Image 1 (tube, rainbow, N blue to C red):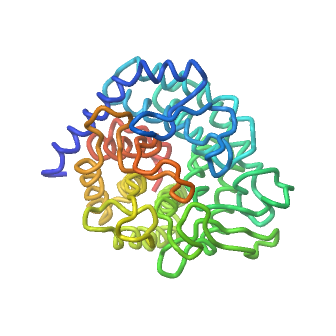
Image 2 (image 1 turned 180 degrees about the vertical axis):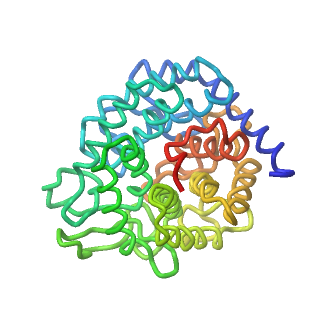
Length: 378
């Protein structure tokens, strides 16, 4: 990494130090059944891990896995047993969700928590928990081949709805396929095959949301979290890149790699000089940024390697210099944006932003310490 190595190594140490310092408050929140989500006025907004979340697109808490995930990642670097113990406790808190096949976010809930927990500790209980969640997720596939984002599969209001956020959730299924759950890989492939032509535009940008008929035809395309139906929501673009990178690593499919190139080129070529994207690429120049989109993309592009490694390190360096929290408030990565269209989590820290920042730093600075569900792929 050359000259960037000391800067990123210091940032990794700083981030882990902040996590260690936050443990007492995190433990107190978790004992009450709540977990950090996004910050408000510099402090974590705590939400129940199992109860409905009115601010979430799916109406369900979807971010708890990233709390466990960042603790697992940090514990690998510093060997802090308290971090690992709290990661285990958060994973246990989430466990009842694994059997509830009510959302595509089972991937986000359980690959950073149970899958990483299994990779870090070798404990077979985490493997079984992750496989339980993967089995639940496979039941959400429709005859069109896509995974429905939310709701009962026979709900006429939700039938056929999917969003690009589903693509990184497939990490759970790619891992489960390697663990012997053949159906997991079949469902992941069918979702990628059906959704990519519909979600990715000719210029490499993406629609956030697509609705399919049962025969696979497209009923509607647009956005939920973005500025407008034809705009490109920055985090949606980042989720697409991350999901495509995982799909390529799992399958070796060159068409998927080509889609990585197109979507990553769109993201990187449209960044402002400071390299922190606006919350939507079609928003005004003065629009709030979303650093979490940059962190997600940096993490993904480090796994692609080649020419994309330099782009990823540029993103990571910008995040460290411009967004790393060195103040008194909560969180690791500032300047994120959760849901601008509803005024939720603007200019804040987010638990997923913190997770992907740590993951990217670990991948860049200490790759041998980074637990990777697809370590043997690609």
